[in-house]
Length: 263
Image (spheres, helix red, strand yellow):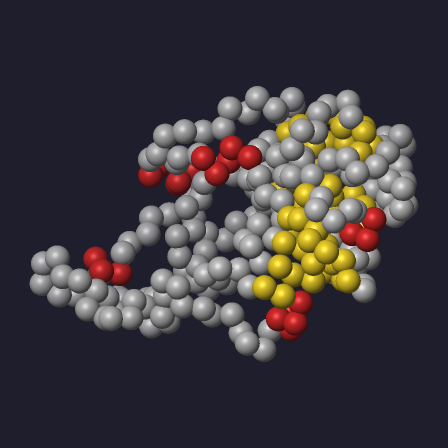
């Protein structure tokens, strides 16, 4: 078993004005029936309201604290503007308490971790995260711990962005992104170590289809330790699995993908 060391955390209690209740379903729908398996239990959490839009423009904000967020793998930074407004942002790697970050549309802005700029003003080759896919909608991709994307090229109104998966995608140059890599890079090395720790996280056990009865799963049944029988492994509902691609060929965003990620 291994876990994070929390050495970068500087504040243990969240900012009260920036939290909200987080209701959980336990994977059940309105009728109380399980619609998403393997969910339920876990420690109670409060939602931290993160500023993904960074819409206070040209006003530097001071980093007050680096905090833990139970709802995401990355750390969050509490920043305060001169007018005493406080916001949470995703904490990039290397951001320290006392530093200043800014969101701006100016062309001559500093290329510094934590600064939020238009893609057209960020040099090619720069590592970025918190990338918008639609102008003004707020950051949607590259938000997990240790992740970063890279601007490969710019052509017309679009930039070629290489995502952590290896996919290269077109993103409008008027969309915003934050400079730097998301912090807490050690997250990928964590070993959960025991079943109980998964339960604390709200993850319930997963039963192999092979271990079920035929009525419960296409791989179920058979005498003793038999194989799955089916030459094409399938899910509980008969959908091919273990590598089968389910993305719709008609999906609207296919035209923005230059190079697909590897399967």
